[in-house]
Length: 307
Ligand SMILES: [Zn+2]
Image (cartoon, rainbow, N blue to C red; front, side, top):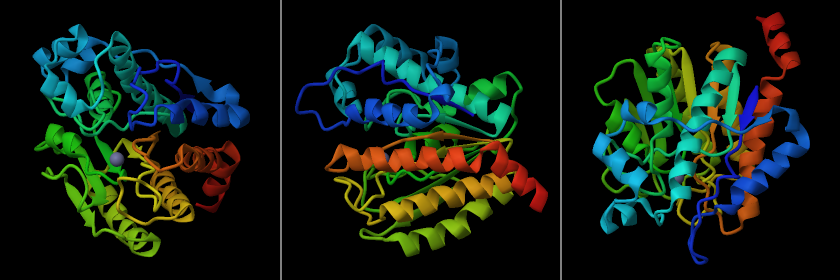
């Protein structure tokens, strides 16, 4: 299992900006302390990779810095060459994590999950849609036919849903808060929306119904799991009330279900906007730790022996 970090590619932000760029370096430091030998730096995706998913005029405007003020405001980041490089590396990390998953069962991107990026515009801190870019690259090289996206970020994966609408080869599952951005939702193959204040028990009970159903219909060669930290009760934008323990149970349930069904999984971190950056890092680090445990060779052999 390989783990891809992109925190060397920092997106310069003004001091008062709400995006927690700091979390990526903190997370990599904690991962380095337990699994340094698995850490890698990803290659950037190419224009060819991007063009399977995004409009050529949009790609050109991002790359050359000619997005207009409204388009940049919708993304939420100021344009810099570093913003372009980071966006390419972040999609590259998801693609590399997918390759690691196909080779070993699991791969991790310590960033990614940019699910609000649409074909011809970015939104909500998302420039390119890393999940769809990765899936299209792997389909183009015939490494996979079918895929499943398990989007458990608290915001709906609207860009992903729109990009994959009408494509039976990729099943999109999104569990999100009803009252959250984006306020105009798209249609995933399976959407579950939660009321404000939903806690661990209701969330986990719903997931336990939704994920098996998605797996049965999707019959995927690969899954991408967006393990958002923003359903957390301490999140500034999430509006749900999951605890750290509940989020860990969520991760364990998803990774166990995929492993039992022999579906390789690439994990991306997606959102997390708790008041304290350390809480976000704790939640993401727990996801990585659970994956390391679940996909350790010993755990895999034990599962096989039981099966
Ligand atoms: Zn989110």
